[in-house]
Amino acid sequence: MTEKCKKIALVTGGSRGIGRAIVERFLQEGMVVIACGRSDRPDDLDTAVDWYSVDVANRAAVEGLRDTITTQYGALHVLVNNAGVQIEKTVVDSTDDDWELLMGVNAKGVFYCCRAFIPLMAKAKGASIINIGSISGRAADPQMALYNASKAFVHGLTRSIAVDHGKQGIRCNAICPGWVLTGLADVAFALAGDPESAKKDALARHYIGRFGQPSDIANMALWLASDDAGYATGQMFTIDGGLTAASPVNPTLF
Image: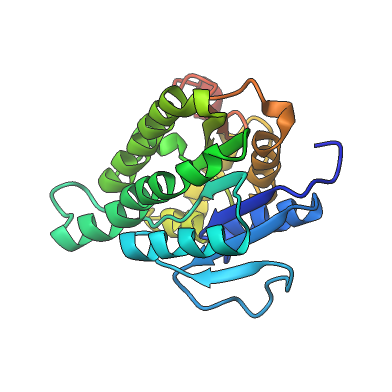
């Protein structure tokens, strides 16, 4: 964006990590920012942010948030579906409770928010839905069966929304982050027998020479939220420092 704007944006999972970075980047651009999460309002969250404690896996809670935003703001221009959880298990090891938790947030939560807010966004005559997918939805990470599947669902839903609702002026895209230094990345490295060696090996596969920062994803989200991205819809934008660009058979790594 080249100009300050007064678009109204909702960011789910906005308390920390990528979601928090998006909240802060949108604020810098002059947006009106609403954020939600399962926790109470973070103590260090900018006072300009309107915070709601909402579990996106709860349909009634999402619809209540929609009603509140409709009453208080009357419009929504940008929806960022960022809320997500991660469980490190194979299919065999995953329990029904694991399924309900992870699919509840990562899949149903995105579905509930899109279903609830698309009618309101259609009134904006130009709106953007930004779903946070993952490279794990493109290629499977070991011992993360349900997470991988949930992100593949997000990618498929993104394309469907772009096709079904484009004529209503709604664009829908997904950002597919690679290794971004958040709490989820720390948990993934901890699964390795030698976490430090695993981290060193992973870094060597990032051809830009570093891991991602939440701000890298926030900058992409800002572009997708802007009118500059007006012709972009139905796409999965991989932001991974070149990790998935190279063949896995790379002699320089051995």
